[in-house]
Image (cartoon, rainbow, N blue to C red; front, side, top):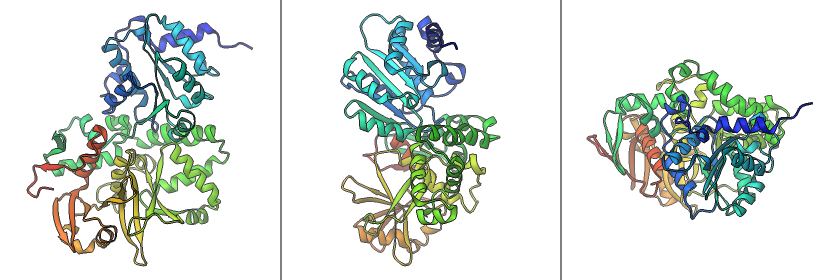
Length: 482
């Protein structure tokens, strides 16, 4: 029985690191056509900061552009004068590298690339979760090789984050690359965006009708860069999302990482939760419906969160306090386009489109360092869709997500936000609409009405640029300024 030879490994590394041979084109043609993610500058700053003696752990779901981001990072490093031999890239899950340790891969990269001279050396390890004990070896490299700047990436983000937290305290910096934000989606398109940022926190609304058309397009297709840019893939989104993303996670990644035996059981649960994105569910109801124990369902949901397929949001009462016994919670897909890939696209007039709007706004926010809950209380089931809490776990913002303009003329119907504001001490609540702006005062509470598409753009811009502290915005181009 033959073993993989050292020469085969070396030749593979040279093929994947074309810049060692002085090739002008670092990235392939398809990648060159893709605009860099807006987070490129932030990751580059983390990686190149000489004062930061840490490895960067790039987390994120499948097909949101982690590998492309790495290739753009390499291009930027080379353009900035870093010697080609000081940059190495490895696909950890490639069959030729099976069984290699992290230390062994570092030695092979340095030998194959002909590294010489003083550092720093930039090393990229893609899909690191398939390398046994990666976190322990990475910690050792950070401790003993100060000349190395290392970035590792992986798709099973929570599993990576758990190991990063356990083994890499003070040595790893986590960076979550989310699905494409609405603001990024607009910047990638060929059509003129319906809104643009003219200066920090100041937007020019060009055309709300066009913006809503682009928003509906984003809700259905926009979270994945490839799907957003390819009309061919849009023709069969089920194949791209279900086969290339969902099935690979459910049938390969999660079973390998967690030893799941009943894959069909897991798949059925995910399908049910995905169809009900934005809805409140309970372990009791899910167990009764599926015949699976509550303990198993809870574990499966943790696995699905680990792969960033979905996210739980927990309930608070009218004053913003968490319930001691959490019987119910909301489930959101982390990317609304996932629902299109499973069940087909929706039109803006479909009955369930409001839940997709809610999912979309959640998807712009959950990856930031904010605490998101929803409120529901009382026998009359008063509810507020999203509650943001500050570091002291006190409510700082209440957002009621509607896909309708009618509440501007009927603010008294917004009993949930109004009652929550009074009970929690908030003086303001935000309400999304379909197309109108307004401000209103009702029962001592200031109500601010935003079109959902504008708020999604605002959240996306704030998240990408890291300016969530200056959370307000001014909208030009509308008669009733928000």
